[in-house]
Each structure stands twice: as structure tokens, then as C-alpha cells.
Image 1 (cartoon, rainbow, N blue to C red):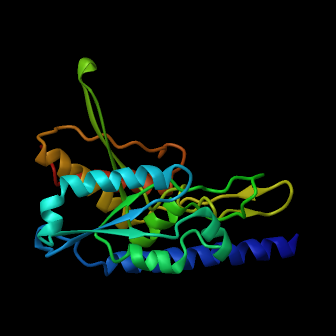
Image 2 (cartoon, rainbow, N blue to C red):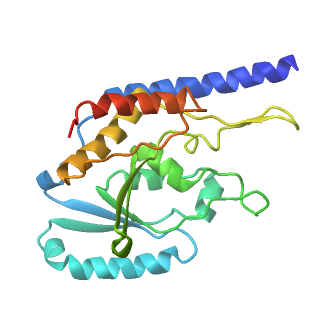
Image 3 (cartoon, one colour):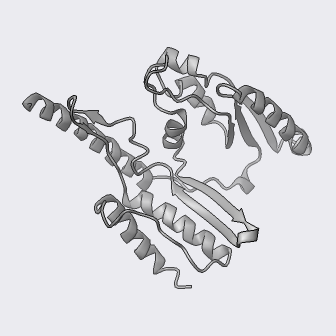
Length: 240
């Protein structure tokens, strides 16, 4: 039993170190890209798996038609990125191969096809989701999703935090024994503030006078409690 406890302590310690380093990166992060100041906007096209390459090919054709003038003027560049396939990912045992990630990071916008996430029992090794890895590597923290149903007077905009919570560490849980498993949830001050502030900024710019924060802070008191408390602090800056 003592060995299992020590192994768990080491595993958790590594996760804490990793997340503290991420906090420091957020603290020193540069300002977001102002696309209006870019000479050329590079759009990366990643086919992925299954039907991904087929639908991406047609999406590329549509973009080439819609952005014909911009491409000819050098204001937009469409760049195809190969290699984000389950076969290639399994070969190098990485969610995103290093050479693919390097090319992705050269782009300002990415149009990505679906990618396979291995499931228990299938033929692929246990590789982390390419989507989760991409969100983390590119710090794509805001998942913004509109929901509009005019006939029911529904006009909602969801702001989901993409790089924290339980989801982002979903592949880094630990099986202590045949009887006991742990997973982890992470919330940081910096991560919570930026997604909450983004939602309030959107509401202000669009004359929306209500922002709803969804948590389980009544039960998950440390992480969700921190998130809810931060929402309360940010809300004070938006009395309207």
C-alpha cells in the first residue's frame, strides 16, 4: 500500500508542477493577435481522419471561391497541413506529431477535420485526443457556441472554458489499484478570469443584461468555488 501511495504522490506532484508552469505562461502571455494588423492571414487546412479529408477538400474549394480576391492580393494564404491522422499519431505515439504541431503554430486560423480519439477496446494505442492537445498547446481557452431558436425566443451564447476543468486532465488520471481510480480537475485564477471577462465583454457589446454562470460550486467547492467567486468579482465591473 505504501508504494501505491508514493506513486500517487509523485504523479500528483508532477501534475501540480505542470499546472504551476502553465499559470506562469498565462501570466506572461502576450496580447491576442489583432487580425486587422496582419499583412497576410494564414489559414491552415487539416484533413484528419475518416471523412475528414473529403469534407476538408470541399471546404477548401469553398474558401478558395469566397476568398479569391484576398488570396490573389496576398491578404490570405491557404495552407494544407498533412499528417494529423490516427495512423501517423499512433506511429509516433503522440496526440499531435511534432512536425504537424510546428506547422499548425505557423497559422493564424485553422480549419480542422474530425480526428479519431482512441477508445478502450479498439486497435489504437491510448493516445490523448488531438482536440484536447491542440487546445492546450495553442491555449484555445474559449469555446464560443451560439444557440438560436427564434420561434422560442431563444438567443443564447455559451462561453465554455476549454483548457481547464475536468476535461483537460481527463487522460492524466491514475488507477491506484483494481478497486480505486482518481481523476483531476483544475481551475486557475487566470484561466477563470479571462473566460468570464470574455463573456461579460460580449454581453456588454451586444446589449445583453444577463450573464449566467454554471458551476457545481455547492458540491465541488475548491475549483468550482474559485470559478464562481471570480465571476462575482468580474461582475462588479459590469453593473449594467
